[in-house]
Image 1: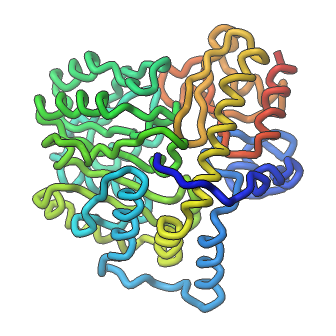
Image 2 (image 1 turned 180 degrees about the horizontal axis):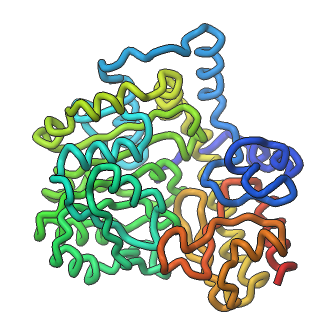
Length: 394
């Protein structure tokens, strides 16, 4: 991702204490009890950027917390994403073919409804994003998992032979997660191009979840699927948002875009309009501010998250003998394969023995047996404390 020299000190992330975190409420830190370090729910432990904080406070103190000016489209949001994408990814989406939604998941569900026949088999790879099954089922489609992830090669993480077999067997729609979660993989443009060629060959409609794209690490090239010179890319629907990277989950706003006018026309459904009307006014303004005014903070954040990922990658193997750790290039999740330890339920084991709560790998598919997804969106000293506690537990 294109970055600029950051003027934001790492201390804004380092100085948050474990004691402070353990006293937080909400879905992450209350999940296992206050004596357990929670490294599960994928949300950051850091405040959003200062411009975003100021914009939210300004809206609250001025009473601008009511209904947004919807169903009129928030063009400023679409333009902000287009400009952000142009600066960071070298390619700009078309604001005229963009849509606002409350959550990425709901936007994807409404897109599936708008573009597919009921009962269509929709594929996605595993171990993969646990929420996709619900996204597909809510749309009246049939979720179909494809075990096609190579955990050792992030730039080429999909086994395209297996993907082609699935397309040949009747998968006509596919949800791509780009960057890939839970491993933090960023595919090369060559890998994505080869995937798009398969989608073209078999007429597969692609829906791309790119919510983690802003958190791509410095020096890593992220390629929006919609930027490719392929029919499947032009007809694709991409979902993006600020909920993850800017820690704005409580202010539901996300957006979709396509590069094909016929697809854009088809997305203009009553369901999509309801999803737009459910978006947060405060969240919309916060996302616009995040995209337009937070590049220095984002540079500092992604550099810090990269450092955390490397702590796990470089230090945890000595603490957890035989552990296989996938190399993340985006986001704040690291995939840890603990098969060598022979612990069938490592999540329950480390909660009991080490007072550390980490997401269960099997929640991402059967290939996650004896694996964990570790949230690294926390101070580096907490990452190291997690490693120490896990080591002491074995």
